Figure 1 (tube, rainbow, N blue to C red):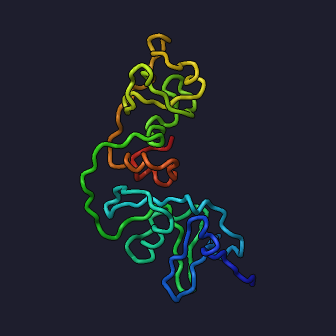
Figure 2 (cartoon, helix red, strand yellow):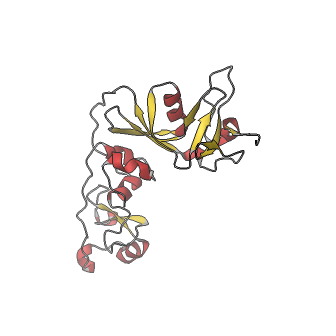
Figure 3 (cartoon, rainbow, N blue to C red):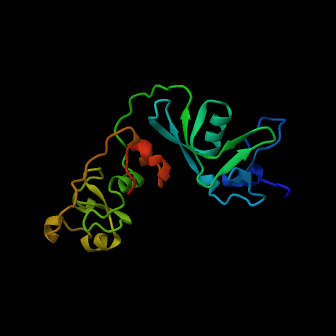
Length: 218
């Protein structure tokens, strides 16, 4: 039987994942599980420092995206449960317990969410709204364009900003659509819904989050 030597979380601390074991106990470690059995000493190759976990209310309403370490702490403390684990089967474990590395967790008790104002305009939110498609040609969007250029008085608002490919952005420059004979594929509007605040601050949403965000996969 092979000697299992999981990669200690302490070794990944510089990447943003610190131990969550209480003082005096052994540190937690990470390994991959295949078909329910240990996969040996191979470390999990994941960007732990940038890893986010979707936090749902007890009613499955999306609340926010948490750092992985904070999500694991909530699960270990019994304040949340894992709804979806890591697709690769990674687990965080100590000598006495183990927790599936989560992608989506749900609070055990309902938390009342205060009123939240309009969704802030961010590049990530705009790309999600336009599904990473250019508002002019429908190609893959790589940048953001102001429909009415800032140099000609255009505001930086949801209604005047669209996702745009580099080619269309270069061709449009500081011109108006009427000067080019172009038309927008979709009229831009400010997004609405509780999940949009979350998307506005997340560059890349895990595909496992999409059913809880009310957004189909692009």
